[in-house]
Image (cartoon, rainbow, N blue to C red; front, side, top):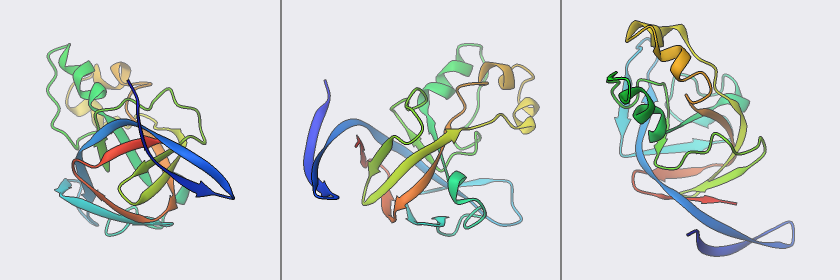
Length: 160
């Protein structure tokens, strides 16, 4: 059952948020390093995740969101992938992959808008050659930052 959070006003219209999930883990990438680093919180502005190597590079694809469902999918085939390896900034327990482009998620004090599905990267085949095919439509989604803010582990996620 969806839980309703406090309403807010946008362009003079009262909007209600529906609680859909929770942030499990947060990650950033650092320049010159392919490793993902787990963080207890991340800060975002309209250019993306502050401190991430992809900050201010492509604002439409500035935040990568992945569901725990992606990791569970490959585990069904006895493939172990550590969290963060799919390149996500935000790992959540809610699967947003079927939401249409333009859908908005309120997480912490930030507001994100889904901009496109994430494509599969070749590096995923280094774990197991089946991974790119298994996650073809289930690796994650990209979002742009509509309103900057802070997102912390365990923050609730609201579908606006």
